[in-house]
Amino acid sequence: MKNITLSADEGLLEAARAQARSQKTTLNEAFRKWLYEYSGMGSREEEAFRVIDQLRGHVVVGRKLTRDEMNAR
Image (cartoon, rainbow, N blue to C red; front, side):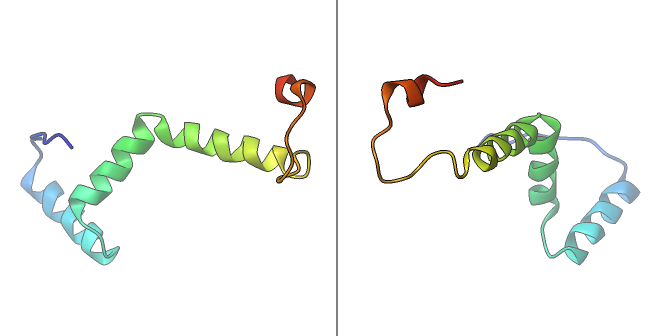
C-alpha cells in the first residue's frame, strides 16, 4: 500500500475524524473507502455481482459446461 500526503483545513479534518469515530472507523479507512468508490472500482464490483445474480439458476454447479454453454453470450 502506498502512503500519500494530503492538505486540508484543520476544522474540516477534526470534523471528519469525529465522523469517523462515530462510525467506529478511522479517517484513513473512510478515505480508502471513498477512494475506492471515486475510482470506479466499486461500480465494477456492483456490476460483477449483478451479472452473477443474473446467472443464478442458469448455470448448474457440479457439472461440466458444454462448449456452446461456455461461449453463449
